[in-house]
Amino acid sequence: MSEVIVITSGKGGVGKTTTVANIGTGLAMMGKKVVVVDTDIGLRNLDVVLGLENRIVYNLVDVVNGSCRLKQALIKDKRHPELFLLPSAQTKDKSAVSPEQMIKLTEQLREDFDFVLLDCPAGIEQGFRNAIAGADKALVVTTPEVSAIRDADRIIGLLEAHEIRDIHLIINRLRPDMIARGDMMSVDDVIEILAVDLIGTLPDDEQIVIATNQGEPLSGKNSKAEEEYRNICKRLLGEEVPFMDIRQKKGVFTRLGSIFHK
Amino acid sequence: MNVFHHVRKRSAGYARDRMKLLLVSERIDCSPQMMKMLRNDLIHTVNKYVLIDEEQVHLKITQEPPVLYVKIPVQMKRNRLEND
Image 1: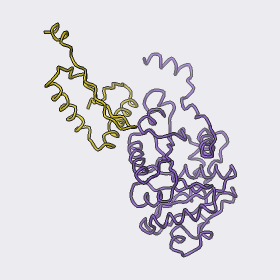
Image 2 (image 1 turned 90 degrees about the horizontal axis):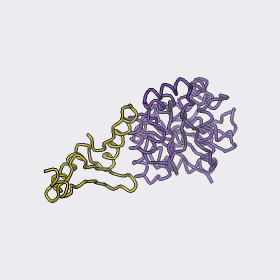
Image 3 (image 1 turned 90 degrees about the vertical axis):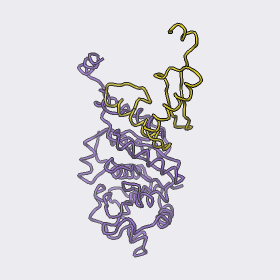
Image 4 (image 1 turned 180 degrees about the horizontal axis):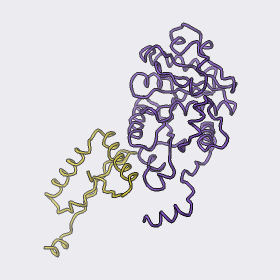
């Protein structure tokens, strides 16, 4: 039974593409056959995050137009034999594809893969409507900032309006030190505001920037964010994994400081 | 702005309260300004019949299910006499 999952956020720059790359890689490492699809036509990015930018021949628009067969456009990741990328077009714009064509494409991909992960563009226009058209469920990525949260709420409303009710939240770039001193909204705050089920809490982690620079998601050894990306994969596979405690372990001085603060 | 009367010093609490108020009003398509007008109208209407503690009137909208809760503390006759 295959699943088509759209990763979306409304606001740009919150970590959609990084999330798709990491979850796609993680699921492939767990032996699932995965295709990650870049639906951001005109602004393709997933290929560089995965380190596959030099291998693109055909793209999503070519497949939809019938200029090539689906199999010709899929790029196999040599490091992970179960992972494939369907890149987006760089020269066309978002009107080159319709929601109906996207539904047809996802149905085709469903036959060959366990997971179809759709990287949605920012915004709520046609690119968003294309990306969600064929999806069974959605992962909404946000950060603990007012702008990202407001956009996430809008997106959740639009997903529900399009009959996508299986919606899970990923909170990215959490800063335990700032949460501890009350200058960043906590995981509980964000869940209370948005009222959707949580599937991942990611700390702000420089290892993710390093892995992206190298085009190798999940390459680090002891990074907290990578561990949590693997946990999200397990949760998607139905495993119950407890959420990591995002609060930082306090040292003696921080503790003393917080006593005086009250 | 004080429809939800939370007072917090730190910025996260402030952000949380602003977001709760804003998103609820966006979901039901009723701006914070209109919420304030609604609160004033309710006070005005109820005040015609019973004496209420205006400062303590509290409006809250829950998300699931979406329900508008209004808490209007009324003043007892006995208390009124003592105060007068």
